[in-house]
Picture 1 (cartoon, helix red, strand yellow):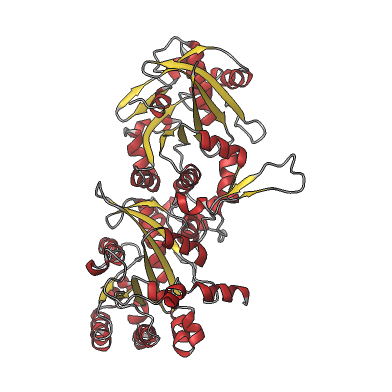
Picture 2: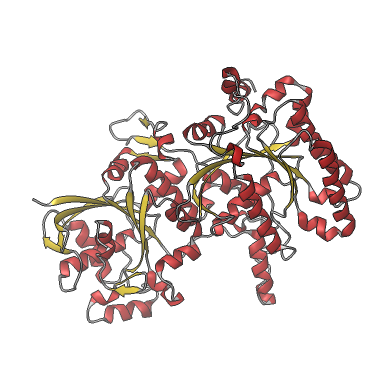
Length: 285
Length: 317
């Protein structure tokens, strides 16, 4: 009998959770690439997986999960050193996490997934919303050519009242992790996944350095709570490129094997094994 | 962090049509803490309480917001950010200094006198590999409260939490100190606050009191005369308070300097200040207020940040 394992995908809307799942299902069901974890059998209702993976294969935008369309995906897997196990992943709507931040409550339904989680994947899109200070913005403005000046002065039309939606991404993600710690009260492994890694690959830095540079509050939080959260950072390019740009989409479609669209980076290693973050969460090195 | 709020968590039924609506578990609010929530933190672990006192506009909230903004950019003052129960509260006081506010000039939301005192929580961990985690509560209090405390026992009760403070930072408005018409008042306002605290017997013997000259960039820009007056103000405070405040110290900072005025020195200044404000003196490091007479049960009961008053104040506005 297989051992059960439960993963929890956390992330704000558009952070790449469903796209990751679609690419994962393509890789597992394709069975032709060398992955740490492999599919042992097909079973259960695969309608949802097939639906999102179809969009992925056609380089279309994988539809965002909304609060009404949340699904639980069960995968039968095995791998060297892992044995056979059933991996359960609820595909929760990013909107639900956004609501946790503004409404300051979690549904009992979602809390049950938190309680059962063997490991957590925290997704974030690299285009992060920062809490730029006016003083910093003005200093940057000074370095711009004359025509581009005025972003913080003339262009300002008035003051925006503060609301929790305005807080920077890094504060939102720290708060989601604090909720998690509050509800679980046990040590957890957290795989931080920077999705759409292809967008920032040219910066030439490993994913953990990216987090350190772009989301330093999150990085500090993860490091300072290493007694409660064991973490690793992965850069995952699940689409392979910007599918909203027609020429890029066409190039991706023309690849002789869709598996080539996938890139996974941890530290200085880059490969195509999309199961790597999951294997790490389940106790792998 | 997890322990404290788990006890507060409660499951709430929603609306009348319970068959359809899901149930929810409440999470912590994330706002600046009121008395009760701050108390939960102090009961859970040894918490360092730092109170910023000063006249209106002296820069109390700006210092508080600046500490959080620096942590947003990376480890600061030898600490890593390890969490906060009042993340939204910090974000709110930083808003007027953010591009997202739509404002033009950096600003800070003012502390209102009538509001219940708010506390901002930071969990910090030293950058060294084996450093312990420490909880810090920061609070900004208007100088007006201290003046009222001098005149009225009832108002003094509002400030009983000060007996629990590990560090009191009295801010002297550097901008006013640099202005010849206002500098004597600025000096007197700060002295008044400290005098009020001493008169009302609100300082514990182990409390570190630091006189901080804020907006150092404005003082420097005003020239030698302003710097000389700052020196004279220090001398005056030394003479007036040293005998009654054994742990008295002085510092100058620019928490939010005008761009390109003195950025490097101000960065180091605030970092040094935070490290000093959150370090327990050797005599008090193993147990709070070691050497000081143990408070009576009644006093312990009463000195929990002056909660009683706040409860009363809230119920009878």
